[in-house]
Image (tube, rainbow, N blue to C red; front, top):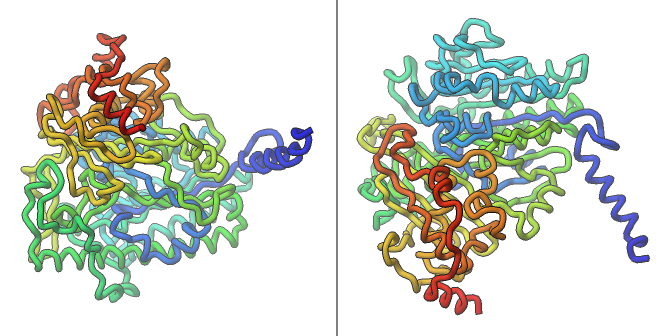
Length: 600
């Protein structure tokens, strides 16, 4: 009888859920439209979203914000390659912004022109459109060698004009390049996007559409001819040139700290001078000014969607390819690093079934973008995906938040020779070619833990308890990790020492640093096997797994390299697994005693 009493409510809930998914019994046959807005180098941790009131009005207040969304490579081209393919950079092997290891050339050479997101969407009946920056070194000489496949309509910005704020150049629908002197870049990109929007809305067959809008703000400017003209800060459109005059970059605890912080070459950086900090603050203001045009155009976008009667059946996703730091850990304005400022990026979704004003703390990343779009489009996922669909609708997010289902880990990686600094005198970007930014890092977030673990190519290790130390200032990585270590200090909330936690996370890094497909999606299962009931770091800390984790090889680099060379990143998990199919599992008494004491 109790079942009969609740049956009407269950049926109503089922009907509500059914209305969110296209193409199945009882659901609308019309697939949803999807618009993807991708800014360039936009931060979360420097609070840029706080200065975009129209984005807040239309996206944050009317959608769901994913506060723990991470790029998987904190630099443009490798990050974008991962978004379009659903693969980590170690699987795309697009690991740089320039040839031979990156850029448009490498993306094409790897064969992705016929196996990336717009191709799959077109196969599923979608019209696809693109306006703005596509990939680095997509330029006026190679734009048609080959043309990017998979786009019904396109207007790609082309170097050397991609980063020209007042002189964009592009190829529209595969026509020869044109330069638009005196046109503000962001306005140009959105104007072209709005033309595609009108075209899609007028489609006589009513085909669903996917539209990407990729303005360059707040990326630095690269005067033509690139790169000989030098690199400078972003430029705003005229109406916004005097905004934020007294604003300064956030003075967080890791801003130009008195005590060095970080790992690799970062911990050797000198303190920034007062005049250099003043230059940094001007960069901060210029970045925010450049974003004001994006904010205004988002307002226009939603007015157009409403006028075209498309708003109720359109998902809008807002994100950035990577984050940005200014003064954090004594760093000049830039990106490339594994720290939160560089890898935590905006990800906001609005659309059918998405909760309004909701904040989600599930861990997601850019390799999840392609699976997410395919799921929203009602199209099949691909077995090779390293990522999984983000739970953007309210029912999916509610389900994902149930204990045992919540994601906890994401990988960020980098291979690059040289970093950028900013001239204190001219404000232009300078290159420091001698420094190598190659690393692997993990972010793990659970109900009672929030951790960062990173390994630089010089084998510096970093471990931060982000609940107590969100600015990554106090490295907990235990001295003598590979030998004795500190087996008594407990990390709060995990009932485990830093030594034990590091052994688990390092083993997780061991598999994730070269994982493929299912192993990326379910790393604990790939590591321990389906027979072991381990789905999280907390599960893995059970002392009965101590012997196993202490048998796993420690992750290390043999050499710092400017691109991915696996011979310098050994040992490799798949090779080790073949020779170590079964491992002894059992507690080490001293660690088991700590675990028991903490649990009690």
